[in-house]
Image (cartoon, rainbow, N blue to C red; front, side, top):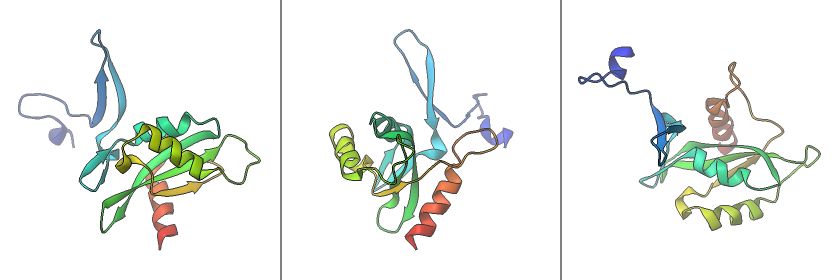
Length: 139
């Protein structure tokens, strides 16, 4: 894996996505392998999650791609409501928020409201588990 990560010129390819600010500082904004490919377009889960998290109705959000025969992958959102006693979230309101801030192809096509997001041992969102859950629900 190390040999595959270092190219002929000695550059280390970590798989991280980063942006550079006006003074040259880098900020990690995601991972290449998490990029969702839908209808020939790339969607950054972090971008969609930021929009979802801007809603006062959302405590946590995670976005993954699930396989789709027509589009390649479907943008799929998992939402934890801000109100722990809430059994649902107004998904039409969240979709309208997404429409107002994102390109059409970035808007989630599948929505899941959950009590909590699964975490890995290092407390990161377990996106593989979310994909499995979404795919199981789609069958």
